[in-house]
Length: 484
Image: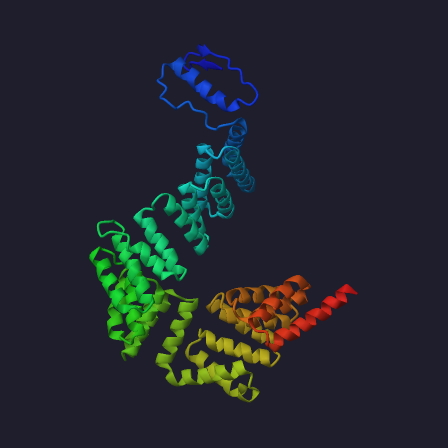
């Protein structure tokens, strides 16, 4: 090693250090001690300890750091290459920890990469890396903690709870983290466990207000109005006033028929920037108090900004019923006739759907009904147009996707049909008919393994469904032909 004065180019000191086989990990501390002496620095006790206990761990640590440098260099010019380098870095850091579970720098780099992945959105492999890390270092509370954060971000609620509870057992979580853990328990339906954590947060804590707010929301959603009221008052007294709190209180009162009492809470939720669903519920409560005019105005306001989706669809239907009660009754009757496939009522149903659209052109139910009538009549193209219009008004509507897929099968557009029916089945996983039709589409596409998987699943949901049984019989016939 040579130490050079950058300003003058003069050599300040030189030193040679022999590195025997297996002693690479000790070379860095030896270099640090020489450098400190050369520049007159004071070396604190323990600062020159090896970063890894053995050469295998140390080499893997260096390789991981090299891969991070590669990722940085490639991030702009070759994103795929940069991502691959991050993956290799994770592998090398895990290799370092496997060789030396106490290699703190390797654990630190893993945790930093995992935290950064929350911003990048590529958390899947970091989750797997942290799962491996917790096996190597089961007492690392930070590993469990970051793993819990990543799992929660990925929507793996139960797994996130397990990781955060492990972290809490090793090192008590902060009060805000306890509130987050309680929220995960509430989302998993374990309200008793959620309340158990919330009760541990003292009134002097900065997190007391959010804790009481969450307690109120959970209690109100369970229908326990008294417990919800007590927690609500504590939350407000502690300065919490989020829209969720007022919306939940309003919904609880609304469900009990106390519409007049619900209205001010919905209004407070809107004042706290609550989403459009709050205004929809406000309109419902106002309508149920008999103020049809104000309910209509609230819906008009909502539909100025919400033009598609479930909330917009429900708002249009409510406004339609308020302003055209007679047409709404005819629409409901026509819808039942179209779904049941009663051909004797098709002409009357078509007239009702067209009258409804004349009053409310974006009423998805009427477009859906016309699509059903067209499909029953064998007019696949008209059915496709109607269901496509529904999906413009309400993207990802599972029933419209399903009917669109059936109509696509009628036109022999099997690839598009598979996509629509698979998406519908994913949105309605407990609906055996949707799974069965997705399986039939896969059979038409030639993917017999996927077809059997879906049809068998549909049969477990409803063993007596005649359509599923017919599809399975057809699948067995096709499989037999393939074996010949």
